[in-house]
Length: 288
Length: 243
Ligand SMILES: Nc1ncnc2c1ncn2[C@@H]1O[C@H](COP(=O)(O)OP(=O)(O)OP(=O)(O)O)[C@@H](O)[C@H]1O
Ligand SMILES: [Mg+2]
Image (cartoon, rainbow over all chains, first blue to last red; front, side, top):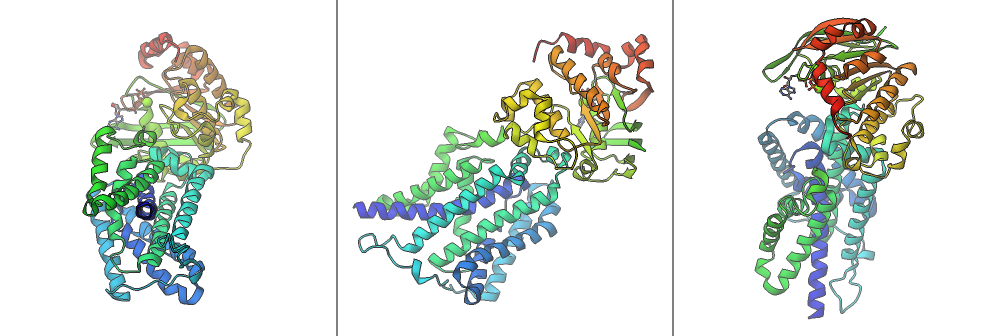
């Protein structure tokens, strides 16, 4: 039983880690651009596929960094050429645009790499189970958790300690004033968008190494990531972090008792949190 | 060269026509004040200069460049420091972080130097913006604009809602800036104190300039002050309790 509980807890942690990566990127983009990026999960898949292409040439470790970077560059270009045109307009435009992008990227992946799943080879050094008893503790899964911790810590340090991070945080509440202080807020938004896409690309590589690649691999992460943002409170990245972990672990624990409710529990948590705190766990912090 | 030159500005919010051909000039090295009662269009004029609510007609020239359709950040990067109405400090950032947001134009102003000017800000540097009093927020907003190392400083009602003692401080500092060689455009409802420190004055009413002349001249014209510049609003400010 202990083993089962630990197994599911750890599973929840892994799933939560993926929710967190995806939701943090979505949340950054939502906060500064006021755009819900429905193509986020497809950028995630793209990151995985880019790693698939790159690994034979440069190996896994460099690809772990280079594929998210390339995905981010693509995100930057998409923001500069398309997304920025709909800033300040009715939300319906961003919904249509990012939905359209989602289909384009998805079909593009399907066209290039096929509908069938592809494996992403990970180095043998991190693929072995660590012990017989705790078979689920493969090195790779620990590695995923480690990378996510490093990425999230780096993101928060960036936002907290660099001038650009401060400008992004200031811009979430008052972009006009940031602009009136001489900061190129168009570039700031593009770069912020690219950072969000970088996190999606990273999640894509990590997920690819665990469950393989397919053109729809990001879809299952998108909805829970929205829930994580709402549970955590819009405008607060710390809230998003907590929200992602909370629903990941809750879903996993529910699996032990009543497996078929493990997805539904996410929405139950959302409802309960919103009833108690309409702005989410840490919602007031950023928005006040 | 003039710091700011506005000619025939027409600005709208949606369909409402707010500015009806506003023209004014801020000469380099001088302190120019723009007076006018509530709703006269002072803030709208400033927003048009800063590119936040661009004018539909007319031109804005800053240090000789036509900036009418420029985005705010390019205008600010020319060396325009803006202290907006209501201060607009970033409530979720600490005092020190607020000071790190502006573009780092080269020049004499640095964070240690603004702490020298506003020791109170240094004491509170780790506090969030939202934890500051009105006077402290005003100081922070001015300090933030100074860190851009502006050649011209635009202040929109810096004395609004502040206790009389702090108002004196704010006006003293604004006058000091002019003596530092920064051109200043000061929007105020506090008519008498503005005219005391200003070189030149404009009066705006209903989106039109209704008076322009040396500040000293307007200061002597008691009747005009009463009728044009909303002296009632000023008295109301004076009586307001400490912020
Ligand atoms: N965002 C807006 N949308 C529509 N109308 C506006 C907006 N902002 C201001 N106005 C209107 O424009 C006119 C001028 O406003 P403005 O804020 O420029 O005046 P002001 O001289 O700065 O007044 P105050 O001394 O009260 O700050 C007012 O009639 C006001 O109601
Ligand atoms: Mg005003």
